[in-house]
Length: 262
Ligand code: FBP
Image 1: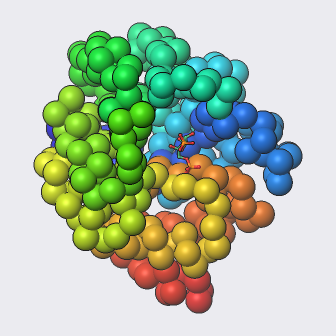
Image 2 (image 1 turned 135 degrees about the vertical axis):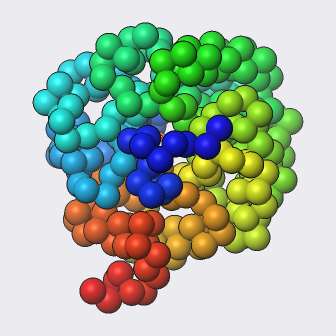
Image 3 (image 1 turned 180 degrees about the vertical axis):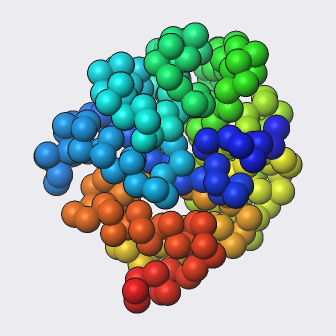
């Protein structure tokens, strides 16, 4: 479904979602270069930046810290997750219900689906319940759509990423988050495959300002509605500066060079 105009996750049809589920997904090692950010308050503060349209966290962070940010941050409650310690076929069990997310003040919910995994059937079924329950409550649903598993030879091929966005559309996600398929043409194809669902770029590991912003520019030019980013923001020395720059590229149509020259 197309994300409606009054949806808090989008502004003029564009999104800049700050993802902070890495404490679970990647563990404390993700904070090695920025140890002060192990304190979730540091990253909640970043989410108050005007450019951020949604903040994706797991239940535990939402329960403990969101009450202080309810007025300044839109909560995208992440309802499933896996630790980096898990070594089986890709699977992300549900860790929070839609009902609980609503009690926590969520404006939207997020769910990871690893299509192609041997455990795809369970994830599809779990996503079905989440999607229907969210629909009943008018909550937008974001799918982290990451094709993975033994049978998947190339997780980022144009075909895999177009399939990923299509799965989001077919299963009823409003917003589908995918990894960069390595070319603007492939991104454009993935956006076409998503129909009316919004496609957002998944940030990836930290790169230089120019590399990162150019990637975002290319994704937006290819039709993506923005991005959902973690490390490329909160692992940076000056997250505010990169959020200012992202605001220009995602919402104002500025180029990476323009925003970096300011
Ligand atoms: P990044 O921008 O830091 O890549 O975060 C995006 C994200 O989808 C996170 O929400 C999630 O924790 C992580 O990537 C999972 O990525 P992977 O499974 O590839 O480690």
